[in-house]
Amino acid sequence: MEFKDYYKTLGVPKSASEKDIKQAYRKLARKHHPDVNPNNKESEKTFREINEANAVLSDPEKRKTYDTLGPDWQKRFRQGAGPGAAHTRTYTASDLGEFSDFFESIFGGQRTGGAGQRGGAFEFDLGSLFSRGRGGRQGASSQPAAGQIRGGDLEQKIDITLREAFNGTNRTFTLSQPDGGSENIQVRIPAGVHEGSRVRVRGKGHPGGGSPGDLYLVVHVLPDPLFKLDGSNLSTEVNVPLTRLVLGGESDVPTLNGSVSMKIPAGTQNGRVFKLTGQGMPHIRGDGHGDLFARVTASLPTDLDDQQRSLFQQLAATGA
Image 1 (spheres, rainbow, N blue to C red):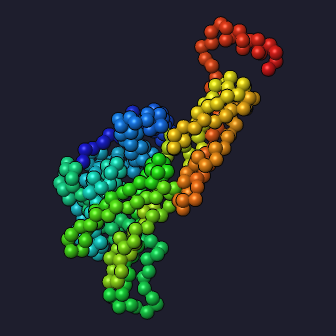
Image 2: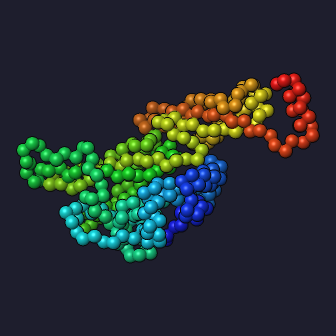
Image 3: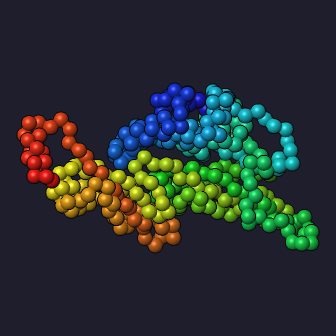
């Protein structure tokens, strides 16, 4: 897998502060956001790369690993077999999609396809990497027979974009089997998931003498440059010309489902928040949507010509 220079992607030096990284990300993300560049595949690709770089560099722990290992950060030294060896899982780079580049760094996987091979896979010991889910039963008070013990549950964090949370998305994994075979599974992340949502994949946890445990995917929604997420509601800012706030009119408001027109009453104060009912995130159970709260900010005119300056001077003379 090709090493990616995340600092170069965001256009910041390696010594950049968290504030510098945040500012660079927001600037680039706004420039390449799909809403700003509809049907532009190159901008979509750049937007994904920007989010990927920010996900690593904005996290102190991930950034430290990335800075320490440099170009070798995506390689892992094979560990000796241990008690959890029977619970090895293999994930291919292509299966992990846009997150494959830093998936390996987080979990320290061993590439089985050889260095530099995109078709390789990552192997790691699930017994040490995944935490036990609360649903994993350890047996009754009396020791059950070995063949009756249910396998433990697994828990795995998964990063998705806000747009993927809005529309729903798929993730594909390749799981190794005890007999040496493999199984491809596709997991549907439903529309409307939010931070901390748990997506259950039945029977894909630790194997046991009885039934296997379950796999729980814990959702982390990546920050978006245009919208802030609060449960099922979204908020955004809309720049409106000063004259439109004073005289009234209409302004376009971006949503995750395309732009909509919003009426601006005459005399609207700077900073007023408007609620656009039903323009927020879909409810995960399919019963409607949350709301979008749009805060208007005055866009002040610059480089006035003589006539415009004269009009403002006349307005100022009235005491307005």
